[in-house]
Length: 169
Image 1 (cartoon, rainbow, N blue to C red):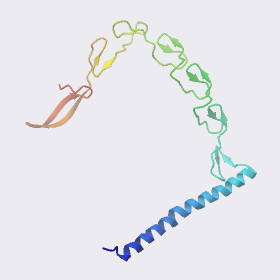
Image 2: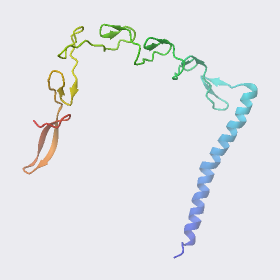
Image 3: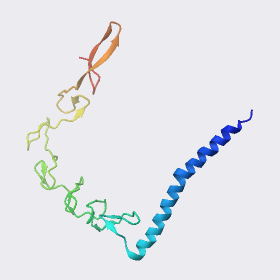
Image 4: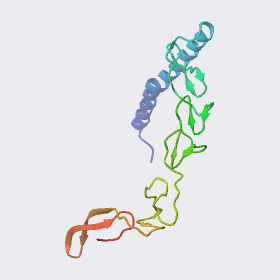
């Protein structure tokens, strides 16, 4: 069975419209950017922040990890003071300066001294080691009860279950 001629005409029109409204504008935009980029190479970029108003190219002025113009950061050239970058404030997970259970530099809580139970000897906070709803160290339990709409043999109703372990109440 041959495809009717009107389908081929319709497909030709659709493809033509796609070319006219999508491909040609993108090609023109690309050509304009290349022309403007050549102009910028001769005369220099006209920057508004970090964006060139002529060619649309982004030109950052990096000072270590931070751009001087827009304050954007990147993952290079940080100035680490222990666990915190002095320029952008980023925290890394190493080289903390612990004062008891808190880092002097970034304030992170950790480095707890737990002996036997779950209470830190230094700061007195509980530091459980959860396996689902039960602490591996002390056996304390803490369920997260949620009610769910159910359909059972008796009809409709609510069922209370723990979202962590599935235990019913």
